[in-house]
Image 1: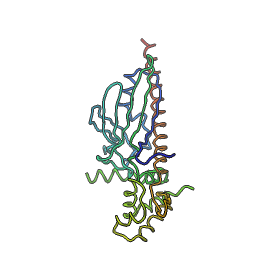
Image 2: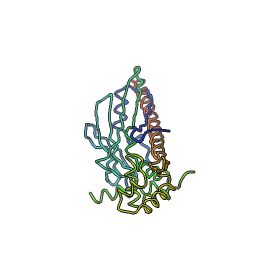
Image 3: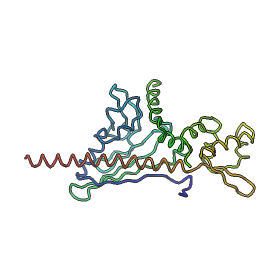
Image 4: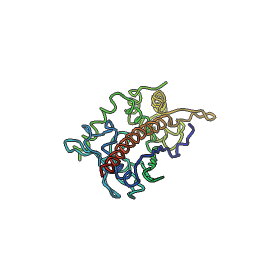
Length: 159
Length: 112
C-alpha cells in the first residue's frame, strides 16, 4: 500500500436487497436499531435504540434503556428515497466531537421492480491520521470497548 | 510483528510524543527540524522518536545525510480494514432484515 499521506482513504460496499427503493430507504434510515451491530455502542450501557432524525442537520445518536443519549453525528444530506449522507463524528478517542467528521454516503437504486442496490461509501478516514494507530489499538485490545464505555458517560456528566 | 496495544497506548500517553505525531502528520521531518519546533533538546527528541518507532507509530528513512521520520501508514490501513469489516457486518444484517421484510410483504399479499 503506497498511498500518499494527503490522499483520501475510504471504504466502499454495496449490497442488493429484495425490496423496492422506498421501502429499502425507510428500512435503512428509520429502523437502524434492528440491524446495527449491538457491540458498537459508545454509551455506558448497551443501546436500546439507534436514532436518525430524518432531516438535514438532524441528530444521529444512540439511546440507552435509562434514557441516556450519546451523539454519533448528524445528517449531512437527506434526499428520500435515493440518498442520505451521515456525518460520523466519533474521534479516535471514541468521543463525539462536533468539529470532527467523516462522511458516510448511502444511495439507493432500484435496478428492477422490487430489487434495490444500496451503495455505501465511508470517506475521509485519512482524518484519523496520526491517531489511526491509537484507534486500531482500542479496536484490538480486549479491554478496548470496555474502556470506551466510560467516554460517553463522562461526556453526559460534563454536559 | 504486530505491536501490543499496550505499547501503542504507552507511546501515545506522553504529551511530547503526541505533539511529535501531530507535526509528522503534515509530512516527513528530520530530527533537527523537529527539535527546532519543540521546547526540548535534540537527544530528547531522538529518545521520543525511538519509543514511537518501537510502537510502530513512525518509520524512519535516510535521505542523504539526514534521517527523516514520518507517520507509519499501517495504522491508517488497519483502521480502513476495520471500518470495511464493520460495514460488511452492518450491511449483511440490513440485507437479512430486508429479506425478512420482503417475506412479510409476500405473506400479506397472499392473505389478501
